[in-house]
Length: 145
Image (cartoon, rainbow, N blue to C red; front, side, top):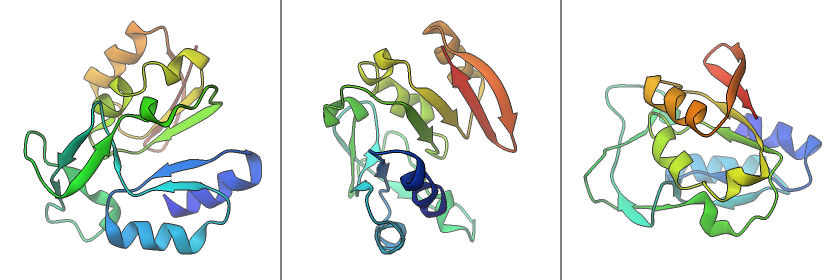
């Protein structure tokens, strides 16, 4: 996340990054300069969420424990009030569908989407709102309208 965010600062005027895990957020803040950083989880509604790191040594593999209340704030991307977005890179560790549902208004500006975890539910959701998969690179899929 921090590497991608830093790279995108060179190509885009307005970069916004969500990072709910405190350690990862500190690392992100130390490695970026112009991005707007939010210490929250992109979600479909305001909520307090629980995060888990299920037997994985990579701190970037934190996942939201669905249905469990916890100490991590979640908020919809639409709550940011961004009128026009060119690109959204979504690495939500299995919570992509919830994050996309919280971005309905934001997606009206037809941004390019880079989605890391595209399971069939996410695939059908994106196709249902007229996005098309364009290319897959490693675990990331690029979607456009």
